[in-house]
Amino acid sequence: MLFEAVIGQEQPKALFRQMVRTDRLPHALLLLAAPGSGGLPLALALAQFLLCENAAGKAEACNTCTHCRKTAKLIHPDLHFSFPTVGTNVISDNLLPKWRAALAENPYLEINDWLQHIDADNKQGNINKEECLSIIRKLSLKSFESPRKIMVLWLPEYLGIEGNRLLKLIEEPPDQTVFLLVAENQELILNTILSRCQLVKINALSDEEVTAGLVDRKGLTEGQAQAIAQLAVGNFNDALKMAGEEENDQALRFLDWMRCCYKGQPLELVGWVDSFAGLGRENQKHFLRYALHFWREFLVLKTVGESAVRLREREKQTAIGMAKVVGLEQLAAMIRLLDDCSLHVERNAHTKILFLDTSIQIHHIIKNWSFYQEQQQARQALGLAS
Ligand SMILES: [Zn+2]
Image 1 (spheres, rainbow, N blue to C red):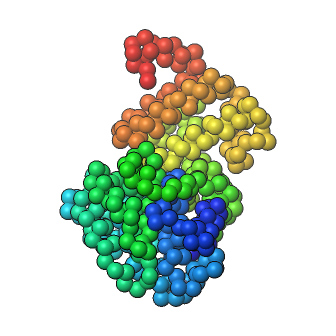
Image 2: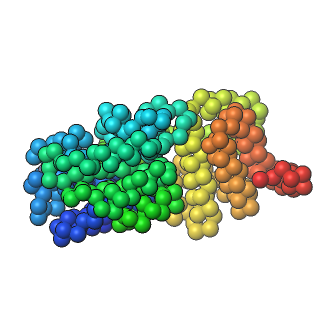
Image 3: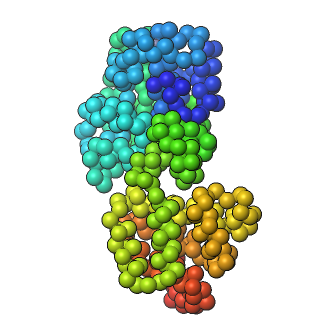
């Protein structure tokens, strides 16, 4: 992967180039990257830059030499990978074909995508003892084709206490060996590992960068890409998924939901909930994220004014209409309700029951606000409120 194929992230790219140019590349670099911001793509680009035979003094690998060609296909014998797997005796090497396929499809993937890709069901990923021994074994060998050996270790958070087997190797690796660790959550990494790496923070992408990435890779129009970028909040992996959904019209579905909630006709509500329950869980999560986005913008409409609102025309008109009947306190209740709802979806609640209940409560918030408040007070008195 070339640096130019990585969306945005000009700062870390410049830093990596400079480290290589001035021969100050540490032997263990930890990329602490916000989810979907491109930690793994950056590590792959840096690996290719380091392995390319024509990159000296350049800003980019040549992409044509044998090393570049092999690195691009993730089959360079001096480029090693380690990542979470499932099962006691499974090591990364057993899953390399799947790893290559997953990265070719989407290098912005996150742990859940990977676990799904290897059919892990609900099992937790792990970087186990055998994998640590395998890393030590591989890096103790001479390099095959390049002067350098590179180990890309994805998600050191999944290294348990076994990870301490790697300390000596990370601290004093064999000559010309580079560790590139790509992590998301600093707090979950063993301190012993953390303290032996040089840390580089990779920030979430800007809306503009996500928009440009979507237009470039998915052929979306600027408007479609912007609408998705606003929901993706800097996570390009999420953005790609949303772009893949048919006619991503979360907005239309949401407006329809609000219409049903407002009217409060039981049959209509049940109909909406039935059709909603047919969407996959991922889609349902995106829908809720959209709903929260809508209400956030609604707050902007109420407090700052129409010009600052990031909604498309039709949604904006609905928001303006609703502003007449929904006050700030009602809005706060709505957001609390949707937050709770998202949490229950994460915990695999029964979709139909959850959304029917949420819909009825939204109806009360909009139409019977005082009734809703009394109900909440009663719940609190009974210790039922969250
Ligand atoms: Zn090259």
